[in-house]
Length: 554
Image 1 (tube, one colour):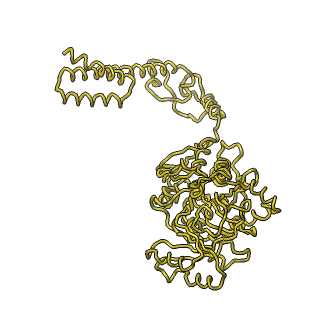
Image 2 (image 1 turned 135 degrees about the vertical axis):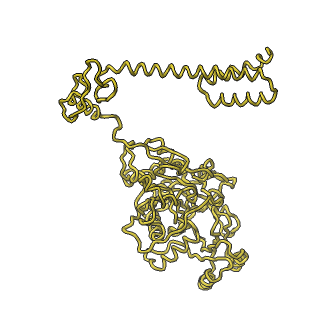
Image 3 (image 1 turned 90 degrees about the horizontal axis):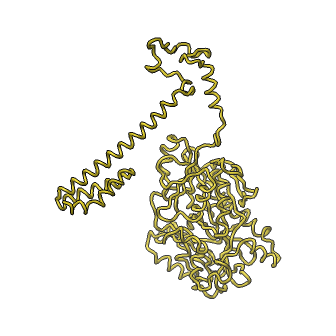
């Protein structure tokens, strides 16, 4: 028996201390251990010792709890003599008539001269005290409860931009973060492709349950311009109607493998026959980061490649390659990344800060197979051994580029920036019937951040290449652009009283965004695309200069 007591003493003490400090989960686990041990060795003495210890410790805990209750009740009754307790007439046995004690009068309580408790305090005194307390100015009395932002990143594809925006909102105050779309919230940051945003819930009960029209970071119809094929279709249709300001998309033709009835093969062959020999860049419609792209001047080889694709496979874009690009220092190719913001009321903004993504190799039109010469995506260039040797992260910012152009006698702000703004403006005008919200249907607001990729040719003409739906931002600009997005897209809908700069949109007043287009009314026809139903593994977020690796999963 004594041997059993020695073995069980440490566990007994642990159970006793756990119950005393109210660690319920821990001592329940102890009881389970005891039951298992009882079944294992069938030792009655040990089991009785465990049970006795548990009972004693539980009684000790219960007694301590009762002592605290008694102490609180004593303090309560001792304060009953304070006049404040008589401000509201309470009808209890103590107020009834007993041996000469006058009973409280419950009539005519609206009369300010009535003394209902017969204690020398009239209703006028009681009401004045209550009114005085209610009129006390409390700190932050007019500030509403914190706003709630749902941040979804279960697949690691939220991206650096929205991660930084959520962080900035939390730091400045007025916003709380949560990871689930259950319950009440004001804003949702979905992952790439809008994955996780509960669009169906918005159209059913959310606005009626909570009285909130939430804001989301994804436009359901954005594929109309971020998908290479759809963007080409939208702009081709637009250029047939409006070519006043010139065409800014290189000549492009669409091919659906096995679908001669919808492919633009005949138009492509007619164009080739009528024009001099040119170079083509061939892009798969469902790929990103330069995957599957190749360059060729051999038309039969291009058609053979497309014809070899399985029927029903994703479409291809065959686009005229800008074979005489403006070269950096006369040697290396580059493209331009422009950051664009679309707000809930269809205002389009272009940020004043942008970046050039540069190549590691000198430009050579005789070598089509060297991807480092022709494609300047960071995802490709960072594989080159000379990545970062010319510019940090192969990035040249607009202010630095403007100085280089100035030395060539070209004003960046007068010659290049207006072309950039025109391209962005006309792109969103072309897609407006599809992108704008439908007031009668959409019980939510949306904003979205885009990355426009452009290229400048040797004659300083700017051409649109493609549009990224999940753009990254260079690390140097991430913090400032994230704050600019908050001020332009979020603050006007959800005023933040913790924000010292106010709640009006600040573009043009220290904010980096410049308004380039503002909707003047709804289109007569509005198109709509289906919402993303589930996580798509092929949707990738962009990495910019290697800075976003922490926010993406390969």
